[in-house]
Image (cartoon, rainbow, N blue to C red; front, side, top):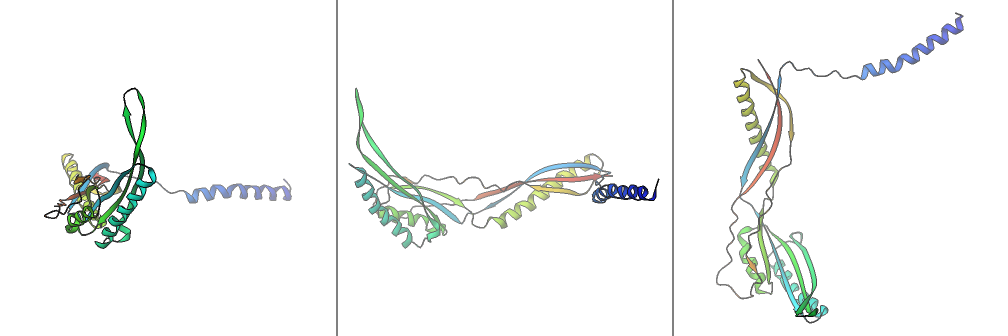
Length: 244
């Protein structure tokens, strides 16, 4: 082989060798386990007294024509919203949840239904951050014209702190279960290999029916609202290594 051919062959060998060396350098060795892997699922739970009440308040009006129904509704709803603001509810805690206008039909025998009028409804969702005032606020809304009240449902403002306690509870339960399995098998828990967390769960708020089509009359006492407790929970998947 001539010197020129030998040089070309050497250059080709070097070029072809680079990817192989690069790929070998990037290879990450697999982690080997000489023990037994145990996967445990555990749910952590914590209970808290809620500090937020969510209620829905609105006005339903009826009139012979759609425009009159909406105008009458707007006038009464303005008073309701003004009462909400006067109660100290912040703008961020007042949200329109529904506006509806629908025809009302009159039905007769052997005749097609005909429109007899219109019904307008406007509803707002209110977040009350001082639960003790919830009943008084509801009564005030009814007094100024609200004739649709539903709720309350209860929530927790700062869930992160409570969920951290639920995490500790789940870890303790998972480790206790791993110790149980290890002891039964004549082994011991060496270490935690991995932890994965499912979503934090707060059972959906359960509305407590309070009033429907309420009368705007002054009540002798404030409506009673009892918050009880809410439960927060989350699930952890924990993998343990067991060994002798």
